[in-house]
Amino acid sequence: MMETDHFLDASGLTCPMPLLKAKQKLNQIAVGETLRVIATDPGSMRDFASFIKLTSHEMLECVEEDRVYRYVIRKGS
Image (cartoon, rainbow, N blue to C red):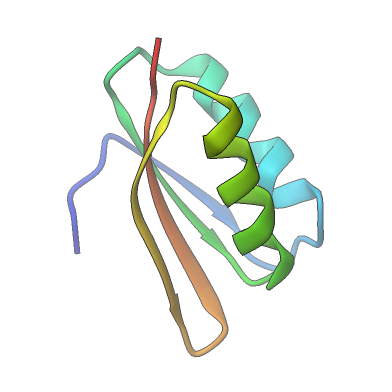
C-alpha cells in the first residue's frame, strides 16, 4: 500500500458524501500532498473519476476490493 500524507475514511457514506468530504479535505492540505480515501459506495468510482478529470488533482491509485474502494489523490495547484 502506498504511503500517503493524509487519510479520510468515508466508509458508510453514500453519494455524494465521499466526494464532498474528500474535496473538503483536499482544501485543507498543501499542493503536492497526498490523500488516501476509503469508501464503500460503488458510485464513488464514477464520482471520483469525473472530479479528477475536472481538476488539477492526480489520481495515483483507484482500487476496488471486496466492495471497498480505495483512492489516492495528489493535490494539484
